[in-house]
Image 1 (cartoon, rainbow, N blue to C red):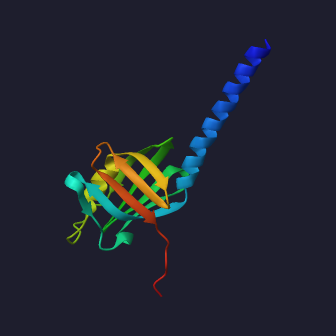
Image 2 (tube, rainbow, N blue to C red):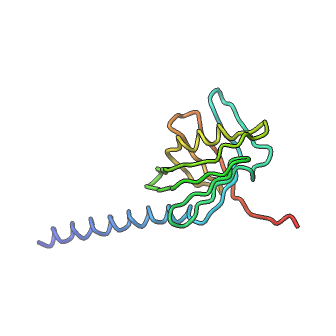
Image 3 (cartoon, helix red, strand yellow):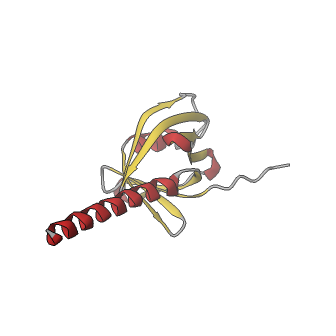
Length: 145
C-alpha cells in the first residue's frame, strides 16, 4: 500500500512539474517582442533585413501574435508545448512592398514554423526543414522624437 501511494505521489508531482514547465515556457514568450535578425535558408543562404524593426513578432496575452512584415501587418494565434510552437490562423495584408523585401520568405517561414528555442537573449524559430530557420533579437521600442 505504501509503495503504491509513493508511486502515485511521484507521478502526481512529476505531472505538476511538467505542467509548470510548459506554462513557464509559454509565459517566457508572452508579452515579449522580437525583431528579425536573419533568415537562414537552403545552401547556407542568409537574408538580413535592412531595417530589423520592419519584421516584428509581438507575443500578446491570450495567445495572440501581432506581426509586422515589412509594409504589411499580420496576426496569428500561438501555442507552445515544450519546444514545439504552433502558429495558427495566420492572416496578413498583401501590399506590394518595395524591394528588397523579405515579406514572402518571412511569412512562408512563419507558416512552416514548428519549433523554437530561447537562448542567449535570442529567439530561434525553426521550420519543418533543417535548412530554413529565423533568428530574432529582443525589440525595444525607442521613440524617435
